[in-house]
Image (cartoon, rainbow, N blue to C red; front, side):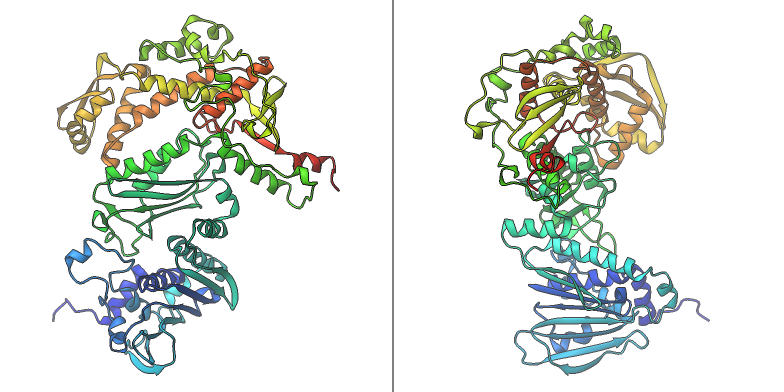
Length: 629
């Protein structure tokens, strides 16, 4: 008797359903993607009892011909690809031909559709028990309606794993949100138990797109977001990235789309995390809605049944493009860009308050007063240059500094102290209020820690140490980038025991490692010898640094560990060399610091991700004193 048997079509579809249909939200995802592939301008989703009782998806797409209805519910039947060439350049969301067959095997499914050239529609019905398709005439406009009833009725074990109605609908709502973010040109309607939850019109203009983003991700996100749009080498990245001050405790507001397909990819996550590295506080997470467009032939979507994962043909190019675009966009953010979000947050704090007309926020000046195109400081004075003879000066100044007052006065830290020369004559503020700089004019110092500045919006409070720390740090990085990274030979080479794969990666990336200041040789199948390291990192843990670099090369094809450790060291030096608490500053010195902040990249946060300034609006102040009531 043969022990190998051919599985029945029903059992094969139920096995496939275990991969494709995880919960009701999986059904909604597959059906909505089919509607979008059909060119639907409108998609309506009706849910009952969290999707267990009913899932109905109606679209205005091209429809399915009556003769194709039985085949549409068969496994491995699709209109989206024909041969291997199509599979290697998939432009549609679906292509496997498994979704409808898998869904129909674990539910009672009916599909009603009509094409443009037919006067009548047709309906096909299938139940998971026998999988026999029954076709009958029906009335329906051009498009398709799919009804899925009694999900998992014939697989009770799967049904027991479902969560509460509220939880399952939450997953469905998130699924519709992702599809609505992916296709602005399509209108979406979501109803649960006959109650409208979401109704979105097609968004064709930039303003309509921002309104949809605000409706789906929250108005605060769009108020604190920076618009980006960059294109190079056949890659285009556009969308919205939140300011670092709008970080979140969890990664629940991160949407990334590749050719309109929502994905979760480690390469993309690493590039985004790298771009936000020195502007996020502790373990906070950035928020973004980003769209990557590239030739479908350069990305493989046939990686996982759920199609949430992709594989790029040139992952390193994509990683560098995403990182550099976001890094540049965040670096170009100035206080005037933060101001809109700060005003919006202040207004949200004073929600419900109806003040006098003059308490409303006024528009912010587009350019800081006294700052030229070259980024000069307030009053036309050029910022003090931060220079060093070589990288060892950094390291020596850090060891000599120690953060003490005596060390701060020593010659070794004179370079780090240089940016404290704020005593510049302040020009007379212009009478024209439109020329007011974004951070306003200093009026006082509070407890030797905070600078109080006056603007038309109200009062700006600046943490002078955090602000000066960022200014010093950015000048240090600029000075270091202008020099070649020098290496220092080790008196006693460090020998590492590694795996054969790690040794092979290190051997194949010798030139890249040398560009990072590392000279590493393979001395055996599982042995590496480190002979040189960057001079600046003389006191670092050499073994751990090399292991981290090799690990990055294995996972991402490149490494920025040396730069990360270098920047961390520079950040420590900037912290030690910046103006300290209880140091009394004059009004001209405070104004010079404000002007330097307006001309410095990422000045909204210090090196540790803490905010450097905040806004208290006139409305908030009026509310404290009950003005306008």
